[in-house]
Length: 591
Image 1 (spheres, rainbow, N blue to C red):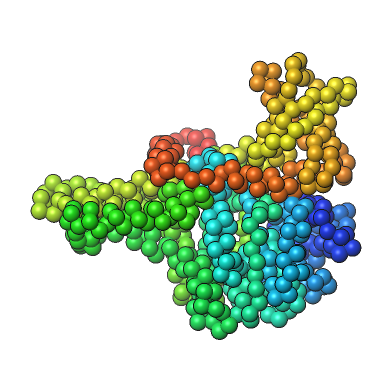
Image 2: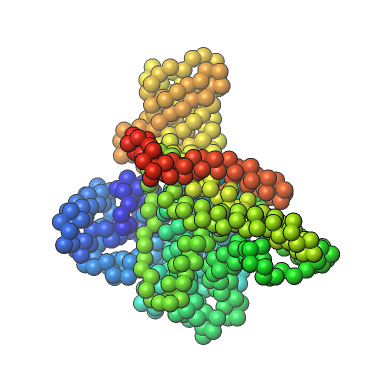
């Protein structure tokens, strides 16, 4: 942990305490890098006081929950240094590393530890990072978190499985079991790059040790809530993987099998996509504006060579990733990241050791709808490409001899413009009504009122804070307080959770409730019921990993992406009017 709220930490700790494992062998430690001696003795008295208070609060939390608190003298080597400092004060043969917001299911150790017992050469058992809330693209753009594959699904559902087949699946920083004696061989978690996870796996793979990937979602985490936080996270990943390329040179690392070198290089080279994506976006300008013939072909040649290539590429992509990535979604993610990660990558190539670890903000609150402060770069890109479109139309009219080529490049440019207009939807940070995302659930429940009246129903969706369910039977449901009883697969027993009724629709028989656990046991049971059942995550993941046609995907992207363009134009007009002094003060504040 570094700067996460105490509430987030308590959920993860309580879930860890409910892991199905012999209690005498399960030791839980909170590694706090936000309350170090360095931070407590900082020159800034406000920061020092905050760090001291944090240490005291988390020490009290650990004492109340019966686990061990760790901190250290200095914040050196970021997450790697934090883990390595604590490892020296523990004695377990196996080590599980969880990020502060990564809540494990009760069967996590049941399904990972056996791989360690089966093969002494296994140093790592990695599991997927399942995100229990949508990232900014999923929330702001598609509003389809429960219906379409997450961005993580392609990596964890397809790529990591392929890497595992070739003995190249690597550590992803959390949701993994590692063997202490193997970590000791490389001095603990590696810290030369800011992606200490992949670097550690590379060092141990070079020594001939093996990794295993278990494709079952057993840890639920929090995706970045804002586009700004999302970009911070991706810039760190891009810089860290590029550092590994430059400092560790996996393409010629001794000890790696040839297929492991290919696996690592594939994962690393992906993060160089900003160079190709920027070229793809702005290359039409070279011809439409400056007359450089970067694409020289006739219409017949395009039909003979280019079109079959595009079709074949789509078919192969659908075959490999059709269930875990919808059409055009990769393009959107790359466009959103390319300008920022390109700048970050250039800095790494100039000074490979310069980047520092930046913690991804988690658990942020979005109390209002606003336009992301990172939008300006996209406004400029749209302006340039629109100018190129106008130049292309002029060239098409005035230069009849090159109309075929001009038409092709114009279509290319229009495609880029549509994608850029679509990403504006992501930059519109929508107000977040609920503090936790609600996910589909199907458990049967019994609602018992204070007057001993019982109702039976089925869950519709569920979160840590509450649920929505459909009641069975006739009659009116009016009590404000009741108890929800349901079977918990995580605990293998019925749980009883105090609830408050928020709303009941007598026509649809839909009941909305908020969990109000009254005892320590109920708090843990609510967490186990909502977050510690891997069957629920598995069913949810299977529900949204479904193939769709290219045309459906393209139509969906354009349909949901172009609507917010008008709102962005209104915001820009408001900013312009504000600079001219045409807006009253109240309007400026609201903007």
